[in-house]
Amino acid sequence: MESRIRVLFLKAAATLALVTSVGIAPLVLAETSEQVVRPEIERREVHEADIDTEDFEVGIFGGLMNVEDFGTNPVYGARAAYHVSEYIFVEGAYARTSTEESSAERLSGFQIVSDRDLDYYNLSFGFNILPGESFIGSKWAFTSDFYVIGGAGSTSFGGNDEFTWNAGFGYRLLVNDWLALRVDARDHVFNVDLLGESKTNHNLEFTGGLSIFF
Image (cartoon, rainbow, N blue to C red; front, side, top):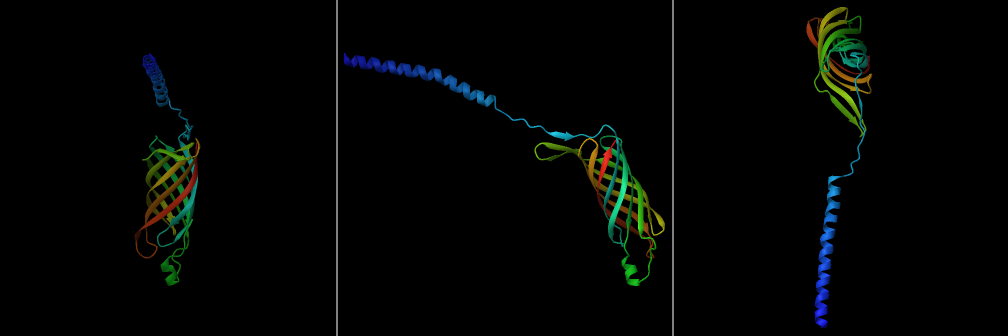
């Protein structure tokens, strides 16, 4: 008799354990599924500087200009541009620098150039080839452009006005919808005959500046 009661008790305990495990399993699976399907994602806000609705840009710049045979000296100037589209702009610029004595002047002791100031102006076409964004930290994104530029103009140096080609590249970063930072590298190419023979001079210029849109 005692043996039968023990068997019945064991069967009842086994049945209860089976029913309990079957009921809990769906709850565990549901909880696990809910965690996978509905993760908690923290969204971050990104503030992006957009260009103003106007297409005109004016600015100032300064830097260094190497005038071939006449040293590297500070250069400063101003520019104005019209943005025809998102990718194309037209720019006019004027700048001035002062030069040093050439090596020929120092060796001979004679002054070849009486006016040491060099002035230039030009009209150039620019193409934004890599428009995009630059990120600072996790919350700030700034509109930026990498561009190539080239054009023609005139250089006044040593009492002569010389036709000048210019070509280079630059980077523009918009701080907000009206203010931009720019870095430019240009090569100004013109012919000179101040030292007794005509030669083509390559004059490298590296500048940084500020510009505004209106």
